[in-house]
Length: 118
Image 1 (cartoon, rainbow, N blue to C red):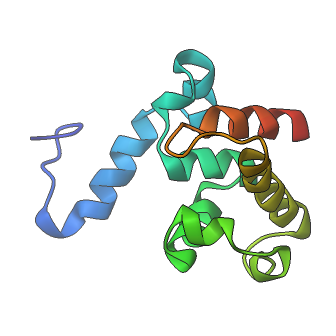
Image 2 (cartoon, rainbow, N blue to C red; image 1 turned 120 degrees about the vertical axis):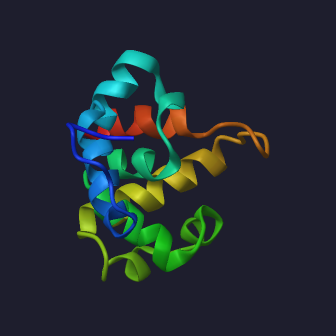
């Protein structure tokens, strides 16, 4: 397989992934075009924080959304601004308070909340 005429090398996986990601529409554009189902969890979280790398770092640090959901604003502050920490905690708590059944998709609600928060 080649991209732009250059064959990928085994040790060049990250470069290949960056090339593929760069050819895809931004997460915001995919939500508008295809709905929030077109995003993975990190991309959805990245829409709330405004930064995809921050979202990936959060999930890597906390290990899962279940653990992230249990985090306080203070626990998020080493990774996020105060405003983004508040957004994450509020978004996750809103999904829980609204009584969304276990296993139901909560991301459409969170993406809409993110739009409201600006």
